[in-house]
Amino acid sequence: MSASGPARQIVVVGGGVAAFSAISELRSRGFDGAITLLSPEGLPYDRPTLSKGYLLGTEDATKIRLAPEAWYAERSIELVPERAVALRPAEGAVELDGGRRLPADRVLLATGGVPRCLGVPGGEAAHTLRDLADSDALRRALAPGARVAVVGAGLIGAEVASAAVVLGAEATLIDPVDPPLVPAVGEALARRLHAMHAERGIRTIVGAPVGIEAHDGAAPGSAYSVRFADGSTVAADAVVAGIGILPDTALAEAAGLEAEGGVIVDDTGATSNPAVFAAGDTCRRRAGDGTLARRSEHWEAAVHSGQVAAAGMLGAEPPQFGAPWLWSDRHGVHVEAVGTLDERHAPGARTVLRMVDGVPQAAFLLAADGHLLGCSAVDLPLVVRAARRIIDRGIVPDPDALADPSADPRKLTR
Image (cartoon, rainbow, N blue to C red; front, side, top):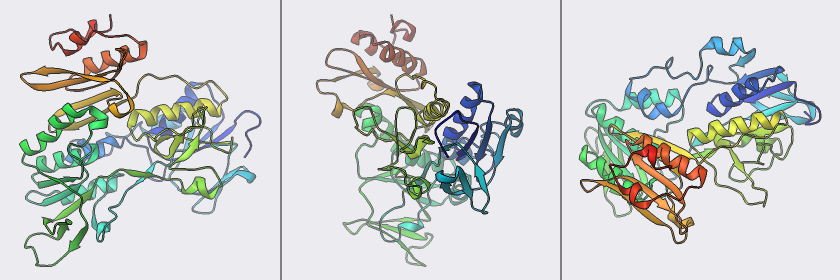
């Protein structure tokens, strides 16, 4: 495996959206060499729906595929439903779990992450949510009348709790932070969104469990007791851990690649071995000044990093993107955020709220000099789209117009 000369044989390890966006970008850029996609689960599929439509049963496994099987054949992409067990850079190969070795002069690691488990006694009993099988198992657990305790009230935890009540289960949502998601959407919207749980009959607890006890008969009708430091407990038929993921760096580290809270990549997606690239949840970018950025675990960030790595493998300039964007669906509302709402990294910033009948609909974080840093909104996609243009163009917006519910979003960028 050597970075000298043009790439002719590329092996992509992983079956998520980062891997898919990379192979799509490679072909879009005219790469006509061999592409092999190692996707142990078969046809790549979209994962955000695992805590939304797929969990609810409104979308099936076929509907959430990123592309039909014919798409890969039409683009001469070999889809191999096997797992890579080792990179062999000196031999220019990737070793599969069956012992076969695939030749490669470039490799893209898009191995994603593994769910964090609850680090408390009995924590291994909790459901996690990362793939189709996890979502299938969780849907079976969320039967009508079942009691579920969800630990972690971030995006995934909140979505699971929302789905639980739709499916007829009783949900308790547990998180040590009150309210969760402030860095992502700002405090006003975070409080509004968290309050929606109680409005839908979900019990919320501020705290962190210290143990999960399985029992027979101690609490009739439930399989577990979630225990807290003060001695209180929550009875549950199922426990869910929605506390984030750990980057899957095992292949990279075994191959001697630099990793620190993720596989370290540069602005082109290249790792410490210039013939190996990484994208998606597994990677962490080192800026030109040597600082390490935080990993992003959002869908759009994974798409973009796959596109960057594809360009990097071809020796092309990486594409440029606008302000980062995320979304979540819960309790029948659609939440979006763009840029940053984290005031901790913006000295002198102030928040402008758009209110309707005393309820915050959107939040805008303005820098000390008036530039827009970020926006979050509930069911206002046009406002978020306008905010993204404002951020990307460096426009100094009128705060009164941002706060005005009657202001036309299309005019905010003028």
